[in-house]
Length: 455
Image (cartoon, rainbow, N blue to C red; front, top):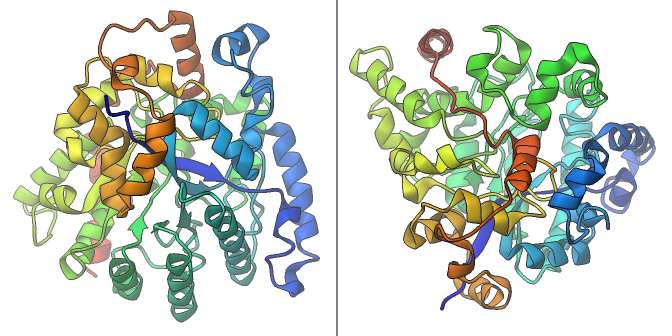
């Protein structure tokens, strides 16, 4: 029986600051010392095995993948490939940022840095990751940082460099919030969209998109260290246990969580897909339960004349978008027909503690129990191959060695410990109720963006 070809469309990489010394321009070497200090504080407070009791670790870490530092695969290639083999994952789409290391100057977990340093840090990260990718045997495919995007010529030059070195995606402009940048509906970004379309780079709005640099350090670290005043932030950062519909209307977490969603309608309003129909966008690790009703809301606004796009929003969704909710929940799989089976991707989120590692196969057994093999094959790997234009043949050879046999993970005949499933919820809000659409909140955002795009 043909084994499952699993491609995780959400993995993460990032090394301690010292690893970038050989990659960053010499004039920034002294500044890396500050990042090293940030890294030490971040790693001390970050999510790790210390979150879990011995009882829970015994449940979720029966093979000692966590306790033997398997998460160090964030920058140790041999460890990473060993963990992928254990999880039955043939390949990964790799994005920036891990729970063990900040990144040089350009990441939301850093203090605020000026644009030139952010650009330099992103370039260093790209070159470090490119070396890992080149040594991975064709199993790792990077997603680039867009950089500050204030010098568009330099931005496009870096897009060409990353594509030439094996990257398959890039975060949209505005990954770090910068008041100097216009909203995504502005024509300023046409050269960026055009180059992404030309090169086949997929846009990846990921959780944390649009973060104000430094804010995560201040609030997120307090939350991770258990400050009771930041309980809501803790739930958002650690488990996504609470949907935005359960958060105060104008709370910072609610506003922050909507930024990746706004990419959808801002790009539609700006005509990005009309001028660049080959653009592809995959919403990554921002859940999926909100999508059907959100697209339905936009369709109704289009019908009412309140959303002035050339095509119906559903049409853009069906031609230009996909979603990778990562560590998927059962109710998200139940929505796969409404979302579009061909637009639903799987992400293990390795090595983040809210992901499926080191229990990916059991996660599939319980979450995909009612999913047909045909749909499962699409979601677990085929859709990522199609969206990112990956070469299927070499990945098949890897899957033939390490991929799970369908009968071992699909169907309803598998028993997964309820106590283990409880740890899924601890890590990822697995049993959280599906989010309900808040029309008033949508009105406030969409109306503001329609007005801005019409100016």
